[in-house]
Structure formats: C-alpha cells, structure tokens
Length: 242
Image 1 (tube, helix red, strand yellow):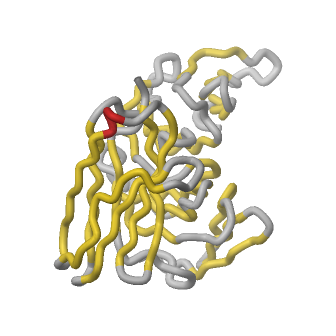
Image 2: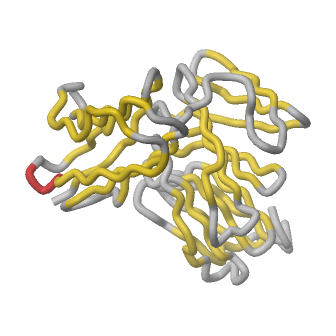
C-alpha cells in the first residue's frame, strides 16, 4: 500500500496497481506485465521494487500509477522471489541457489548489489527486524546478524560476478571481481549437469575479470555458469533463446 494504491504481485499476471482510495469500490488503474511474472513487490516513494524470477529485480517508476515505467533491472544469480526493504536496501530471497542478495537502492536509478550470501537450500522469503535478517530457505530458517554494512554471519561469497544479457541469442558476458589473487575456474553446464564449455581455468590477479561465451552454437534452454574462485563456488543462471 502507498498513497491510496495497493500494489499486487500477481505472479504470471504481473504487477497490478489498484486504486483503493475508496475501499468499497476498488478499481484497477495500472499494470506491468513482464515475462516470468512478478513474485513480490515493495514500494518506496515514486518507485516500486518487484522480483521477477530469473530476470532479477525490476525497479519501476510509479509516480503515475496508471502508467508504471521500467527504469532499471538488477540481474541476480537465481530466481528472485521474496523481498524486504530496510535502510535503503532491498533484501532478495533468490531461489535456485542465489541465496540472499542485498541491493543498495539509496539511488533507485543506480542500484548496486553490495552483499550476497549462499544458503544451503532454496531461498523463498526474507524478513528484516532490528539487527537480524531471517531467510526462509526451503526446509530451514537462517538467521543472520545485520549491521548496516551487510550480513556478517554465514558463508560470505568473496567474489562478485554476473552474466548478461539473459536471455541471450549470441555472446554472453561473464564478469566479476576477485578480492585477491586466486585460481579462477569458469564452466558452462546444461540442466543435466554436463559440462559443455570451460571458459577459464587459471590463476588470476585480484581485481576485475571478464570472459565472453559464444552461446550461438548451443540449443535454446537454460544453462548454468559455475564460477569457482579459490574454495568458493557459486552459479549464475543464463537463458539462451533462438
């Protein structure tokens, strides 16, 4: 709810905006219907933050509720589901092994992933209260201590990485940052777990790295980019279309 409007995450029906200034006669006044649907939404000021499954976090300008406008998309490694906003940050329960993703939205037009934590299950919901963050993670609930600089407990990922564009028809860019020199291994796997490409397997200096994968030679479908840096492993999901 915000300013007399209810913002409804309608799954495959997208984001529905309902005028409830007269609760006896609510009326649908706007909608945003992207591919993959909307799983959750939070509203702050003129912006709505909506989880969009494999397409990550969508940030919409809703200053005119009748005409919501997409401003920015933040790619997440898994399937963005539950959301919670606290202290100018969006906490995302990112299912399919994306874990907990934390996005700084102090400037909604320049969002930045500032922390991410792998969880052992499938993160579906998140709630923040005081100094704690609670993540519903399939068969368990994980509780993290939450200073403003990010979560301190739990298995922190030491690398930042993303793969884009997705969906893609040709070349996909995979890039990230290493905090120190370490062995970097990047591979592409199909949904059966079979490795179809090795993109990197070498020692890499601290700092930025970029790798390109030509996906034009593989069939349409979902693929997993597995990134190993030192002892840490995580996955970015990419979709190839024809």
